[in-house]
Length: 145
Ligand code: DQA
Image (cartoon, rainbow, N blue to C red; front, side):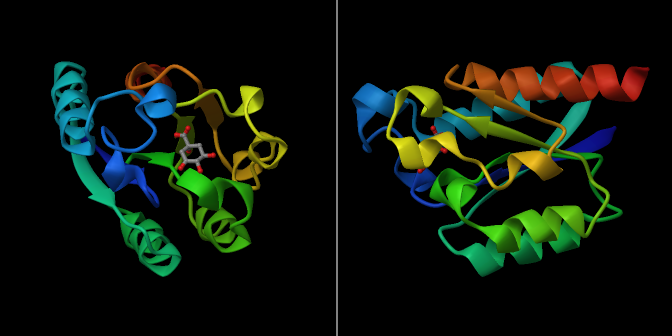
């Protein structure tokens, strides 16, 4: 079975409590369970990782090389300014799909820019937990063809 790494960045450990009108009521634990189960139906195993620390996310991206077929990542606010995470992705060859729960384009202007997106396969925004599932499907299609 191919392996997917799910990375959630800063403040996403507070899903369910944090601004539920924006991010919904699903907790991180529930989200991870849903993605693990959904991915299993599509023949992937998922390793889940969440961190509020940029360096830990970078180390995890480095360590993913040669182990994971793909990374699904919600970099949280790092999306908008972390050149270091962008460079970590660019330094490797594991494809990354960027996911955002909220529609960042409907929100404050600083959220409209992703410095990560140019080194990702694609970006899914505004579809809540479904966005993570769509990323699993995108990897399935990619690896089957
Ligand atoms: C987010 C959007 C970011 O702008 C924000 O900083 C987050 C969550 C999302 O999933 O919608 O932490 O990545």
